[in-house]
Image (cartoon, rainbow, N blue to C red; front, side, top):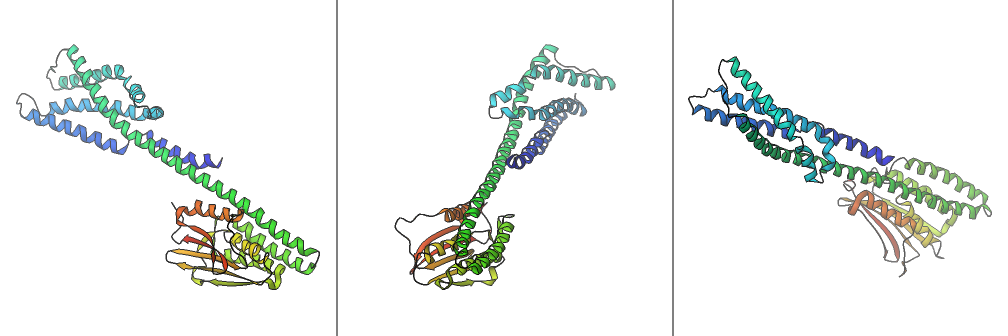
Length: 368
């Protein structure tokens, strides 16, 4: 339903354009007939037997009749838009109206001309009707082919714009659906680990377990609030990390020390919500839980050129040769790709006796 909601307005908007005379074609059509009338008047000025108004009448009646038919074609072209990918079929559907266009065109044009000449008291001389029929049929066929080709070009462009807009809207809808899927995977994974921590303490230290439940409640409120939007200020993202760290510090007590190095000038920078939590979780899981020695965890955030640099590093562990990323890191990497494209990066590597997960986000916004 979400995809239909996004795509529908774009399709309707472009299709509505097909129901009206394109502005570019309107001006091109007007310039064409202005040139035809101007040329005819110039030719008449060299012939003393022709009055100045006669070429205007001849070309004007042709322009009027042709405009009526072209307006009908422009209004009806919406029905033939489905054949734009098959040009011969598209032209065939339009040209099949020629047997009707030719006689009505001749009848309308020559009736007006004869009527005007009657009003001024002059006879209107023209070639025999058979010659008129053959001549006008040839001219109208060439004329229709030329202008239908131009109209086909306008409509093909409108159709390509429709497809491009539809693709963009579809990509946007799919991106939103993918982000929702990734976040739905992240939250159960995240709270499952926290609840395991609380469960391990309930039988040995009820007071500590109670503090953890209270901290989890605060953390849950932030997580639910972040679910309403994909991006959140760095200040709020760090607050969720602090709450998570308080829970983990209750469990590990003196086994881990946490250091924060954050540039105050970037606290309002928007970042993907719950992006850093899996990084901190990995620091505790792979660093603190598996080490018998005290572990230092550093959380840093600062500006590096036009990028926001975020990092979580821990001592007490190192990357194994067969290291494979877990669900949390995979989700972080995938969300960064969807939101920022190639402009963002996530690296996990050994750095001077510690394992560091570093995220680089452009400060200028997401990828287009």
